[in-house]
Image (cartoon, rainbow, N blue to C red; front, side, top):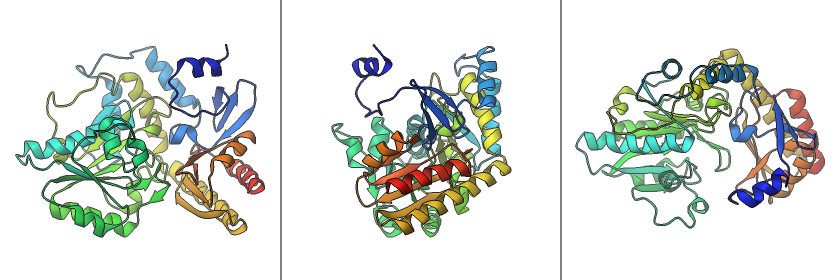
Amino acid sequence: MNSIKKTDNFVFQTYLRQGKAFVKGEGVFLWDEDGKKYTDFLAGIAVVSLGHCHPKITEAINQQASTLVHVSNLFYTIPQADLASKLCEKSFSDRVFFTNSGAEANEAAIKLSRRYFQKKGEKNRYKIITMEQSFHGRTMATLTATGQDKIKEGFSPLLEGFSHVPFNDIDALKSEIDETVCAIMLEPVQGEGGIIPADPDYLLAVRKLCNDKGILLIFDEIQCGMGRCGTLFAHELYNITPDIMTIAKALGNGFPIGAMLSTKDAATGFDYGSHATTFGGTPLATAAALEVVNIISKEKFLDRVRQMGQYFKNQLEKLKEKHTRVVDVRGKGLLLGLELDKNAGPLVVELFEKGFIVNGIQDKILRFAPPLIIEEKEIDRLIKGLNSLL
C-alpha cells in the first residue's frame, strides 16, 4: 500500500489533498515520489519562508537535537532566553509567551486580554471584536474569533464574548464599542480572508480608538508577519504598534512554534500559574526559530523581499491588463492574491500539473506566498504558465 492509500485509509479526511506525495524539498523546490519537480509558491502556507531544508536551520536543529531537546518550562533554557530577548529587541514587545502553533498563540492573546481586565477588577470587560473574513485558528476560541461562518459550521454552541464587524470600516467598529469590550483583534493583512491589506488610515484610527477607550489592540501576524510583507512585522508598514501580537508559521521555517508578544503593561494580565504549555518554547523549537529570526530580520534580506514582492505584483498586474478573467491584484510584499471572475480551483489543479504549487482561497482567489528567497526567474516561469492558462 503506497503513502497516498495509507493516508486515505488511516488519516482523518479533513483535507482535500492533491494526488501526489512529496518526498524531498530544497530551496523553492519540491519533488514528488515520481521524481517530478515543482516550484513552491505556497511555502507550506507562508511557513518555509527561507525555503525547504535551509542549511542553517537544519544545522541549528541537528545541533540542538544532539544536545538538549526538552526539559519543560519549569526550568530555564538558553535557546528560549536568547529567542525571547531577540524578539523583544526587534519589536515593540517586552514579554514573550511561546506556544506550539498560531492558534495557541491566539488563544493566549484572548486569555491575556480578558484576564488583564479581570485582574484590574473590571470583570464586565470580556468582549473581543474581530473582523469579518478574518481567520484566527481552529480551536474553539479561535474559530469563534474567526469572522467566517464556514469555519464554524457544525461546532455550536460557540464561546460567548465575540463579535465581528466589517474590515476597514472604522464607523462599524466604533458602533460596536461598549463598556464590555476588552480587545480588538485583527490581521494587518488578512490572509485566508482574501489577501486584504488594512487601509493605513483605518489602522491609525483603530489605534487611536483603543487608546481613547482603554482597549487592548491585538495584531494577528501569524501569516503576514516574519518578513512576509517586506518588513519584519507587517504593522511596521503602518507605523503603529499593538499591545499584543501573535506570530507562528514562518517563525520556525517548518518547525512548529508560535509566540505571543506583548507590552509590559499588557503582560501583567498573566502571573504564575495563569497560563502554561508543555511543549511551547522547547530548546529544539527555539533554537530553530532563533536562527530564522537572525536571517529574516537583516535589512538586506527584507530589502530583497520588498523588491521581489514589487516585481511579482507588477507581473500580476500585467496579467490583469491582458486578461478579463483577472478582477484584482492585491497584497503586500510576497503575500499576494489574484482575484478571478470565477472559481479558482481548476486553475490551481492546472498549475499543479505544470509544476507550480499555489492554492485557492475564498473560491475565486489564487494565493501566492512563496519562500522569501524566490527569484525573478521562478516568478517569470509562473507568470508564463498563468498567462497560457488564462
